Image 1 (cartoon, rainbow, N blue to C red):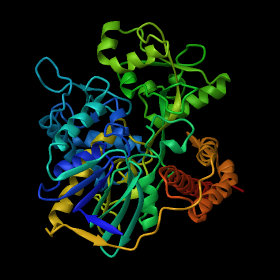
Image 2: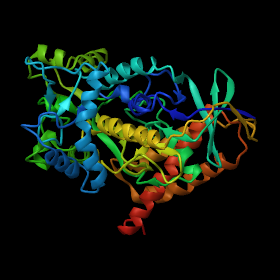
Image 3: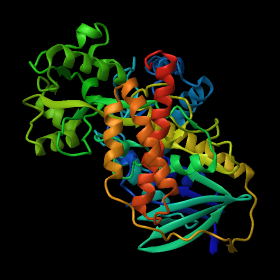
Length: 494
């Protein structure tokens, strides 16, 4: 098989992948693979904003670190957390240079808002669609780079390593193409589609984690899964629209089935502004107390024009669902949202495999601990993708690029049976939703193991559907293995 050579291959076109491309040396030949269209990624769905200490008079690094530690249960990697917080502001300012339009105050400075878990207003935002604003601005800049080749609707179907070369099998338009590189950046996003209900986009199937796992990279704390407390309670669609943390930051109340506030019963000081995992657990406690899973978010007491101007996208989305958030509460319920675990990396975003890097949600830098503080995700994506680029730049040696030949397995095989992904999602939803059900996980780990073994050894045709099923089964197996281990250590599993 003939493999075309590149200096760097970036898998993923969210903030991490795009920002890495912009920070890599312009002399490098770079290939960027986007699983779907460029704007379909979890980064583009980020509403609230990016958290950083931009107001040095009213805020400081130690306060941001403290808030992150509290939210993360003090399980954070302190070295990487300090890198995140102290280097983050310069990357946020760099976004302005790339054309990102943050909301501004009358004096022209960036408007900073408040979100759950933060003790200061430090969230830079563009209305309620910050992620989309950042992604589209970075895309505009990356597409102008002559050294970057972007392939949209390009599915990575195989990733192997021979010596110092990574070999990539890519399917685009029904045709397989083969590429090789010595520097591979996985920026493939989250694992949301391993659950029945998620705020994540369709691409979030954990592919990068599966490929890294099979290359021998360390996968760390994959059971650190975050459930957002205020997803729109869409009981019909798998992808649930997120109602941003910033809505509570602007004063919205959480209501139970009787349209009564309840957070004061469980969190008398922080109430609605407690961290996400705390609020999600409080909702489940209130559900048990009332016997109802009907919950609401209410900001209708605020000025209607303020709500429409501050949250135009959310207002439009919920209006399409039949609710006017300026006049009435909107139905919400916890939903899988984010992954704090992932491919283990160091402070430069490097794995233990030479040349393999990971950034963004698929990576585990340890900065978030067991629960991510609101709006730290985009900050992590920026800081550590830049550090990856700097590490690659430092170790780069220019060579003539051409083609190489390797033996490579055929993608042919038997057809994949239907229903595998549906079964995996059902198992994960019942075994680990907000809090793990240790006994259920102990029962389900056997079936997940069977599914994983079947996919790995069944001789199936290598298609996008197969790769995603394999990724979901791998992710589910690793998560439930860690849940069962934790359950045994706690004495919850007999």
